[in-house]
Image 1: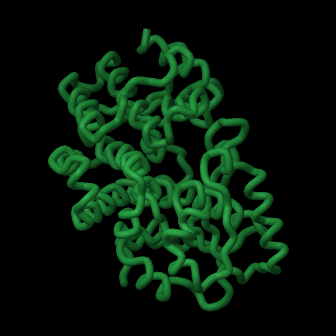
Image 2: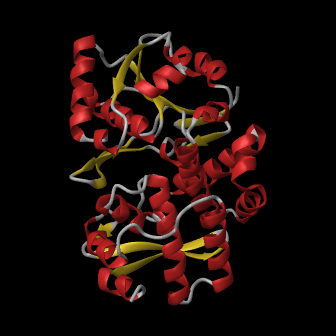
Length: 338
């Protein structure tokens, strides 16, 4: 099967049945899989041919300690520079597996099978591999491209409803950034149709990956355009730091809605487009009320990795399918919520 996309000529993205694609894309030789217990139980057939290391589930396991433990276990297995690491799971698994692979023996080849919607439309694609430090998101990590990413929408049938919805937040983000047609498709379909129609879901995954792949093609290391992919994440990451009430997708949904509100106050987004953004997120089932006061969130944004020399790079939607990155002090950003 030909890849749907190729990122930087080094990372092929496939959309289709993982069981059929993997034999064609894995190199000859030793493969060690990294996954978690839930994925191993649900998709054991995918993992059966490989030695498998399991990591814990949840953000509390997305840490340097987990990466160190993985490296120790790879040493115990006698993994060498010809060993291929295969991450099979959601965004936490692929982040941890990719980070460990990128530093073990100064770098092993690796690839992913993404088993969550959030991972397929965002986390597994693009070469960012990172873990949290003291609750701050992705503060340690690398830019290293996986050899391949396999996005199999059929694997998403086993996702709990809340996890499936979380992935839709990143699809909405991609649509707001650069794809008005995808936004309209999400408006037309709604949650139930997306949940029940694999063909429609495949089209959404493909469109969202295209947005990210095209941006990463232009800016691999987040020096310019790639910052647009942080829409909703400035306050979304602050929500995750301040509260355990929301998962990543839910926090990004709130962050995107708040960014749209701020964009209207800034004068770069029409109120009607803000209403469409908020309306779509609400119809998909997101609670757009921040779990903690916005004033508390604003205290954390300056510690995020998107802050450089005391200046935030804040992403504001400018329409459906367009956005801009604007340098802004934390005080200036906070004034938009006063």
